[in-house]
Image 1 (cartoon, rainbow, N blue to C red):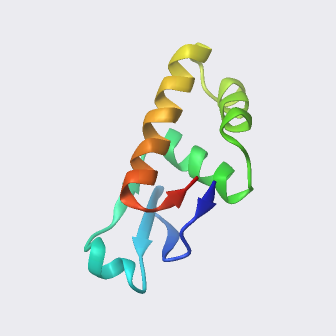
Image 2 (cartoon, rainbow, N blue to C red):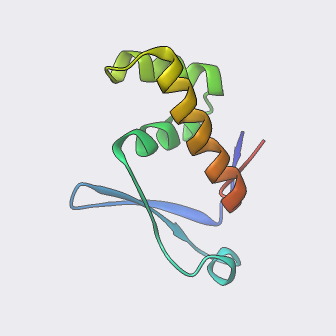
Length: 88
């Protein structure tokens, strides 16, 4: 997956936010605040990890079964794709 460079990550007071810059400001006038698992997924995307590698890392980090982790990761990734923040 490719990350849209028109978004920057900022961490403030324990919160992780995606902030649109450049032409993305016109499309998304606002800030995306990520949950703990969302920030974890986004950080792995920045490292160039695949969907399956992200799921494996989440199994180690979070106390949940693989089906739940895979479902949650897929839902979050779909949201990023729909928002234009990442592309496949």
